[in-house]
Image (cartoon, rainbow, N blue to C red; front, top):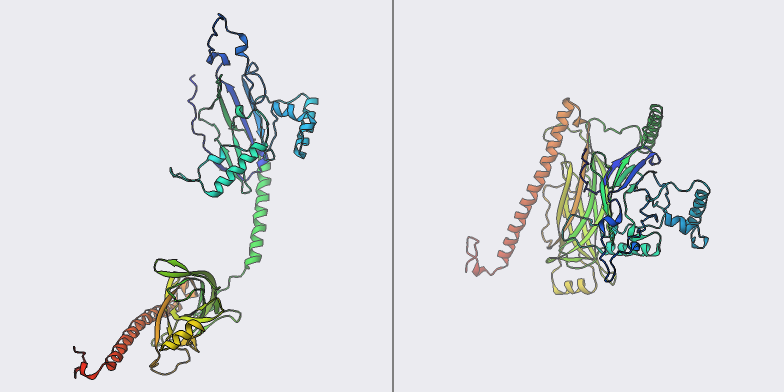
Length: 516
């Protein structure tokens, strides 16, 4: 029967097992293909000699220290972290002067016990465990990606130097140039087993070609010969595993709680996990942001312990294109509840508003207001990225700008809600006549909104009623956006009117249009 072809796939194989790794057993079978060294080596005859010296065919030592005239086939069954000594290690550790570490002395005692008994069973096949001073030199040249033009990072190069130094400190432990790694086995705490190369199975054997003056060809196979668990052992392991899972569930329940907190009928709970991402486009450096959430006075509430405001750290800016950007990455979270009580169709619910104030701090600890802004929180759940444009009050005159530059300080709003429509305002029209402002930069927020309500799972009139409330909330958000656009048009029209009034009368026609 023809032998199977060689297996050239020497990559890693990953397995996962819940069994203890101490039950793992590998069988390695090693066999020489070439009958002897001199079949592949024909030394040239020296001048003056008709016969070749027999010393030329002196057997070459193998990795384990044996001569090739011994048996040409070997098989070993190896367990996890099982130590099989090579002949060189046996000769080395028998000399007490060569033992330097506690591990060396432990190996010496084990070798002496082996010598007192029948001796070691292995010949060529030996192992290195996790405690041995062994480093696979192939590791430092492995690539981390599949890119053909991969350049090793600084950390990879430094770690490669560490591995090479460890290998150099290893000394003359074995004939390093004759050693060949047959198999590498790695196990982590999650039960993931990595085998390189993979178990042979139905594939062909792996091959090894030794180098030197007398090359040899070897083949070897790797098989998993771990014993199958008995039905009694499997049943016992299943009971232990179920008991462990039950205890873990109890532990998680003790952390989270067994009762799921539900909302009252007709209520909507809003959870927001937000982040102050960045601020850009401002005049001065070393920025920080003060923000707070204003809840509408009607039907909205928050827990007593809830903090609805925050302040970021001071952050230096960096150039990004034409702008200077300060990256905060400041997280915040809050919770609020909406209770729908007004059943009239004309009642339009309001939505919480997020206000922000940007300030700068210079080397002399002088503060300056860089801008105010506000935005309505999204009425739909999910992830949202909001960019809030800001402005600041402007004081006309050169003296005011010099004071802002040299002394610090500037015009400030006593009530930050004045950026939008203050919650305390009860009139029909809010006039900002005479307030001069200057457009500054913008602040970026990233919000993850979560909404909880029984209306999302109940199929009753309450769900329809709550659905109409949510639709109106979304409509309120759209109405707010339209209101902002109309407000911008009103401001532009008012500025044009002011500019027209400041022109001489001879440049204005009776109809109010400017003329040349």
